[in-house]
Length: 126
Image: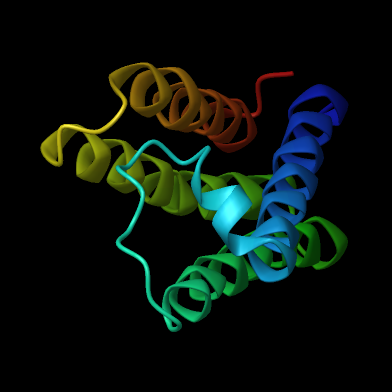
């Protein structure tokens, strides 16, 4: 009976993979929606931004791999650990005096959904 939290986990994984693909293909466009002040120009900025894309794709793939090969409880544990990424992003944006609405509304809400989904999977609540 874990279909709802596993479905949410799958959506979260696919969403972060899509975001990661945006950072790989159109890094400057993708960066504008992150919440930090836009980085200063230079030929290497897109390459630095693409690193975020690799991180995001990897994060999503880990969740999907766990969904294929592990128990719902283990998927919950991975989601709980990966929620730190969203909390970290939110904290960095707030500390940099970036876009508060994006920090809380996108990164903070994502972290909350991840923690709630992880809790449901870890506790066997469906």
